[in-house]
Image 1 (cartoon, helix red, strand yellow):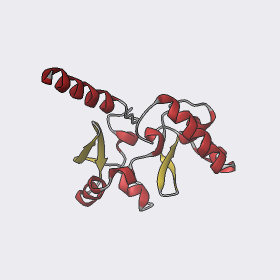
Image 2 (cartoon, rainbow, N blue to C red):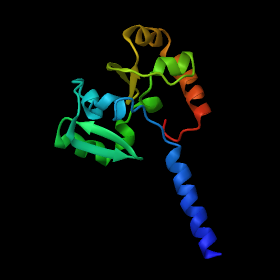
Image 3 (cartoon, rainbow, N blue to C red):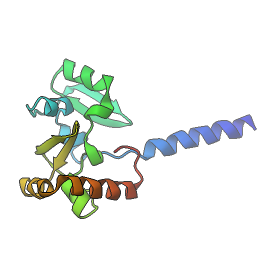
Image 4 (cartoon, rainbow, N blue to C red):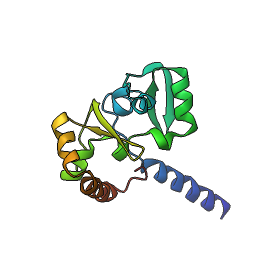
Amino acid sequence: MKVLLALSLLFAQFTIAQDYDFNVDKGAVAEGYDMVSYFEDQVQEGNEQWRSSYKGFTFLFNSKSHKATFDKNPEKYYPKYGGYCSNAMSVKGKKVSINPEVFEIRNGRLHLFYREKGHEEWLENPSKNKAQAEKNWKVFGHLND
C-alpha cells in the first residue's frame, strides 16, 4: 500500500511538472533574453554564465544580480502566456513565437509579441485582449499564467 501511495505521489508530481509551458524555441525562455532587464526598460540578452532553472525551464540573465533577483521571485518576472505572443494568444488562441524586443509591462507582468504590428493591435483594446488571451491560455491547461 505504501509503495502504491509513493508511486501515486511521484506520478502526480511528474504530471504537474509537465503542466508548465514556456517558449524555449532557442533553448531558453524568451530566446535567452534577461527577464529582469525588461522591468528596467533596458532589454538585454542573457548570458549562459548566469542561468536559472524554473519548473524545468532555462532562464538566462546578463548579470549575477539579475539572476539573484529572478531566483527570489520568478513568478514576478516570467512572461505571461509562457513567453508566447500575447496578441496571438488573444486573437488566435495559438502559441506563436516572439521577437524578444517587442514587449510591454502591463499590471506588473511582462507581455511579449511576435512583431510591433501585433503589439499595436493589442494596444487597441488591451483589457479585452488580455481577457481573451487569459481565456485562450486556460484551454491549454498550463499552470503558469
